Image (cartoon, rainbow, N blue to C red):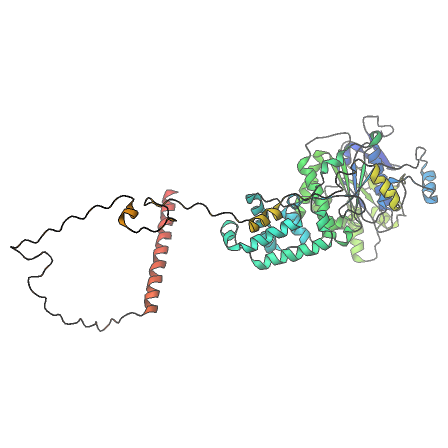
Length: 533
């Protein structure tokens, strides 16, 4: 939808009087913040509807179940009617959006799965809560899978490969480094806990293709993909890793598009602080890098959280469009959050931003969006336009009907279990490889043939007759006969300082000679290596 007065070439939508979100600046990311009960969800719904009317696909994480109301038109709500009349929204009408439901657990939407290989060792280590040593062992497992052509698709594949690594740790030490049984055991216990949290459903095939999020919706509208995350909130690590995996996959697979009049896709991450709680610095750096670069691929990311302090500063600095609902300053930490939120806006001489944040009513917010030139507009105090969908949860029948009418029915619903690491390793145990054929003996026969019984057998040719012995000459004694009997010799007395060495001493000397020989070879290799280099 084009902004009035801006011309048809500049699409966008109004958040409220005096606050417009331009489509060309929507991929510069954004923030929706505010305390519980101040209207963040209604703002999220209104923004998702606005992008959908522009033809932009949207992904929204539904952590409380009320985002599902996007699939149903608004009913009779006196507060909504009052807001519409107060703002004079003449074109406002109840309307359902094209919604597709997804669920990592598979209960409230189409199953959203990914494989162990696709999620990668870094996110998987975060998902399992591993320490640095255990993360190193997990890297060894992934490297071994790549080198040996073993597919890591689901949890049983990972368990089987971990057991294989533990059983063959001595052989693998020379290839990948030391692997301790204690670390393998800790990872196996973490996998059991992940299985209880729904990991068996989340990790597997058919794997979700993130490019399916770009499928056009009906009548030129962008579909709104709602990720049911109510059960995932009981396992926040799974929720965080799922969203980060989606973000990283989109970053890797989408081509560059440059500047456009509207984004290609918009993501809303609710409860955004879960993405960064207890996250290692390397992961935070990766998120910051992806957030900075993914906008050039036409993707906008909007974080929804209670306080701006929930996000790292490196990520917060990438968010150009901001909607700040009320914050409560009851504690010193709350007061710090208010000051931090106020300082992130471009000042408006007509508004005391820090004071206004604590005085905002429900559905009211301080808004600053990016202008056509990319500069932030001065902060404005705005009444947010109400969404056109239902504010609240939907019934199971309504959810089922919405799923059946969607474009992905039958594509991801049934799990697939193809041959992967678990089956390959099981076959190795049940059917070990036959030993290689014995090489021919250098002496002309195979070493597995019967033992030789004669010289002809040994050399493979008839034995020659031995020459007749030459009789000794009568003029002299035989060559090996002494002309006279040897004189008896007295036994040699041992020297006073030398005694017969015992078995232990002989063993020590033999070991010493072996060590000296090995050290000598290493010294020679080192010297030669230096010379050759």
